[in-house]
Image 1 (tube, rainbow, N blue to C red):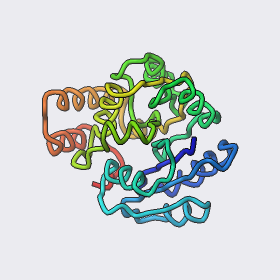
Image 2: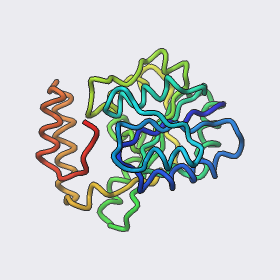
Image 3: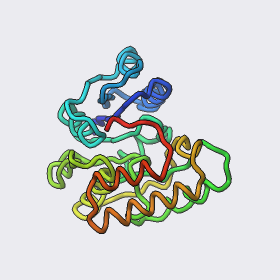
Length: 234
C-alpha cells in the first residue's frame, strides 16, 4: 500500500501543523504522501504545510469536492485517504487501513468523537459505531483504493454541500466497505456558536432536502440561515 493522504483546506493555519505532524509521526514507513489542496486561504495554511514537507497546491476549483479531486490528480498512491484539516485520525490509522485492505475491503472509514468534554456530544459519537450509511460522514475520514475510485467516480464538483455523503453512497454500493471500530478526533467548533439541538435540526433538514432533490443553492442558503459557522471557500 502506498497511501496518498489528501487534505482540503481553507484558512486552516491553526490546525494544519498539528495534523501534518500527527500524520507523519504515525506513518511508520515511507509509503505515504501528504497532499494539501487549498481553496485560496488568506492565512498561512499553505506556507505552514509546505514547511513541514507536505505537497501543496491551490485548487483551480473552489469547494471541497474540487479540491479533493485535484488532490487525487496529483497523487501517486494506490489508496486515497481523505482527511479534514480540523480532525486527527487515530494513531494506528495506517496499519488499520492496511489490515482492511488485506481483508479484501476496498473502502471504509472510522467512527468519530469530538474534541470536547460536553456530554451531549457523546450522543453523536455513540451512533457512529453502527455500520449504516446514515451515520457516515467525511469528517470521520474516508479511504478508498484507486481501483474503486476509478470505478465509482470522483467527488461531484458541482456539489458544495453533501459531497461527502454522495461519494460515500457510491462507494458503499460499489465497493466492500469497512467501518474501523476506532474514532477519529473531530473538532467541535461548529458547536461553539450553535446549540447541539440547532446543529442536529440543521443537519436533518439538509439531509431531507438532499433526498428530495433540492438544489445546491437551496441547501447552502438554508444551512447558512440555520447556523452560525466559519466562512467556507464557496
